Amino acid sequence: PKAEKSKICKAYEKVGQRVKVSGWIHRLRSNKKVIFIVLRDGTGFIQCVLSGDLAIAKQTLDLSLESSVILYGTVTKVPEGKNAPGGVELAVDYYEVVGLAPSGEDAFTNKIAEGADPSLLLDQRHLVLRGETISAVMKVRAALLRAVRRVFEEEHMTEVNPPCMVQTQVEGGSTLFGFDYYGEEAYLTQSSQLYLETCLAALGDVYCVQESFRAEKSHTRRHLSEYTHIEAELCFLDFNDLLNVIENLLVKSVKYVMEDPVAGPLLKQLNPNFKPPQSPFMRLEYKDAIEWLKEHDIRNENGEIFKFGDDIAEAAERKMTDTIGVPILLTRFPVEIKSFYMKRCADDPRVTESVDVLMPTVGEITGGSMRIDSTEELMEGFKREGIDPKAYYWFIDQRKYGTCPHGGFGLGTERILAWLCDRFTVRDCTLYPRFTGRCKP
Ligand code: 4AD
Ligand code: MG
Image (tube, rainbow, N blue to C red):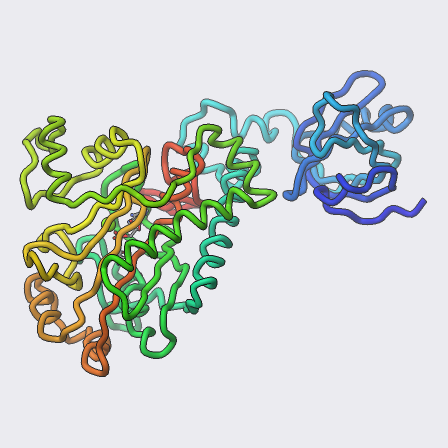
């Protein structure tokens, strides 16, 4: 009978039919009479059985893991209780080997030996990606980006694509990657926020999914030099509205990921104890967080007791979040520890209408704020931070030509994933992590 070409995930539904599946040998086991192959094509796994003459012929071929093959055969149902992906097996009657992978010293398993030095594994990242865990995280990642876009679209927001090559900073000069742009100084973008702000009057509420770059010199679990930044900017709203938008985005997009037929089950496998966030999130003001840290004798990196005005660095932030154990909207940070563009609170000008979302195990996954909407105040912000406003004329114009109250936020995709998928580090949540000393493969 004719064989219909099929993706593996679709073959599960084709019991009794003869199909042609293509992929890579994920697992291989044989005895004298039978060869069992678990074939992988990225959409799923299927157990394939070669028996009789086929098995004998195959033995002489010396099949190896990660070889690419095309298998023809009939999809058969596997009895309940017998563990087979999709509940089926492929009774193979014909095969072709497309690319035989090496065996012996150069064999796939030797390249990515478990327990190997992490930096060697990162050198072999292109091979490690084929593993079940990382590919599962990548599937969840794809579903997360789909889910986030779906929520934004539900809110009638427009996706835009701001430039990566820029001549302005957003989050401080110390983490800028600079380069020579036809003889002019330019940087890789740290955040698309300023560009999103300029889009409001043209497109209304906007969002983007764009790489951001930070020259972070320290090695931490949650800092990358390049990460995928989900950013949104909204107009004619107040600080409380902004907090609700962030909360809605996180609750809904996690819900959509969990409902996804592919990503949902993978997420459960990766993180069986995952508790989806519930509205309303706990809201905690910075000044109360400082008191909380004092009461719990959690200290800053120099071992000193926290005081108002201190930056709450990674370790203390995570300790606090893990102890509290639920998502936190940490609000109203002091002006001095935040960026030049943040709006001050009307009832207390020492602090800003700013927010970080903190999640257990990771800490900060989102940062956002209301923006200064008057030119005068913005100029003060530039001055305080020692920034020459000349390069920002276009950003200033947004205040000059029909200003409006507005605010937005940025989410680190890899940080959300570390939290969702229970990964120790954000490096496990991106294809090819970039951090100090690593720019390959
Ligand atoms: O808190 P950040 O620096 O805020 C901004 O860039 C704002 N301009 C965003 C905005 O309002 N549109 O970064 C936002 C988020 C952080 O909460 C974190 O999740 C992530 O981006 N992030 C990083 N992720 C990985 N590696 C890094 N080096 C990161 N720096 C920030
Ligand atoms: Mg931040």
